[in-house]
Structure formats: structure tokens, C-alpha cells
Length: 271
Ligand code: KIV
Image (cartoon, rainbow, N blue to C red):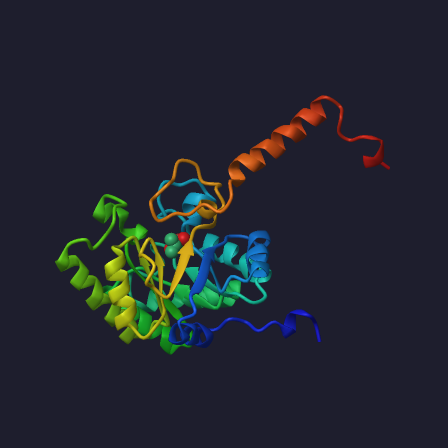
């Protein structure tokens, strides 16, 4: 028996149990094998192959340009690095909005070609038929409400969502619909903490927040943000746990200087 087969994989059932027992769920994005392996070793519960890769990995301004093929490529690498974590892959913009058949087809491609364990879709009632169809085929679905970056041109800004009562009530209705459609969990992005609290109290499925306050069932952050790789991005909800941008730049500058000064390689570093 290999060491890896002894590691118990996180599942939709264990996540549900965590909600019931009040154990908080930790989730982080990753887009490649190396970081996925590091986060997995650290004990992360869920790794999200987010379409935020469009910004963090590819340098686009929004999440809209990334394609299904590119998501599948990244998700496959992440899956190979994760021995315990549950891996969720975003359905990118344009791969599910057409109709529920297209949503199912894209989800099946992700599951078959990358080995991911679930897919995530943005939206409420307009995608519930798709959620039900995907779940009926045996694929777990995570929902995403609040700030939904794939709709950025509809909303025009990345500011906090659902501050007004009417929008908050609509979000609550959509959250219930996403749950009824069969989603196993829901991401809430950038909404007031009081609303995050209400949604997680009302829903039976785990609610995972990013900028949704302390009362939700778990937290997710984008790896480049929490590791301090992202430049000029400091929303209130973000806690930085490292300053890798400076550390990596310093390491690279030291290496360059050593090569130029002929300090590297030395006698011991050659054959
Ligand atoms: O794409 C992403 O990284 C996400 C998180 C912000 C939840 O959807």
C-alpha cells in the first residue's frame, strides 16, 4: 500500500459534517502542481482552481478571457499535487451560460480531463437548471453569489455587494435556490458580514466566504493575495501571511549579482 492511499480525501460529506460540528473549512486557490502540493501538505481542506487564474497567472484585467481548455490544463496539475484536499474547478465564462446542456458538457470535460472533484459556477436562479443537471450526472457543484467577477461589466465595479435590503433579500432567495438545485456548498464574495451570517444560518450546506465576514462556515483566499505576490491589491478582507513578491525579487537579484560577480558557482558547486 502506498503512503498516499492511506491519506483520507476530503469529500462533500466531510465538508457537510464540518458545517454540522462547527469546524471551519479552509479553502485556497492554486493553479499548478507545486503550490497545490504545498497547500495540501499544510492541511488545506479545499483547493479551488479559480478562474482568478486569468488575473493572477495570465495577467488579464478580468476573469473573462480564460478558456475551458486552460482551466482543464491547470486543474490537472493541481489534482496531481493534492493528495488530501478536495479540488474544485471553476467553469470559466462562456462555458456554461448558454444552457444546461452546455454546462453539463463543460463540467464533464473538467471531470474527465483534469480529475477535479467538483465544479463551481457563478450565479443564482438563472443557473439553477444547470446545477440540477450537472448534479444529476454525479458531479458535485459549488455555487458562487455576491460579487461575481464574470459579471463585472454588468455591475461596473468590484465594490461590496448587497448592502441594500432589496439586493440582500434577492441574494438570500438565490442562495436557497442554489441549495435546492443541489449545490453541496456556496461561495459568498464581498458582502456585509451580517448577510454572510444570515445565509450560513439559513442554509444547510457549507457557506464559504471571501470578504463575507467571520460567521460563515469557511474562508477562501486567492493564493497570490495571501502570499503577498499580488501588487497593489489590499482590500479590507485580505490578510497577508507572507511577502513573497519581495522575497522572490531579493532572491533573484542576489542570484543575478552572484552570477555577474562570478561568485556562483564556486568550487563546491561544480563537478
Ligand atoms: O476564481 C476565484 O479565485 C474565485 C474565488 C475568489 C472564490 O472564485
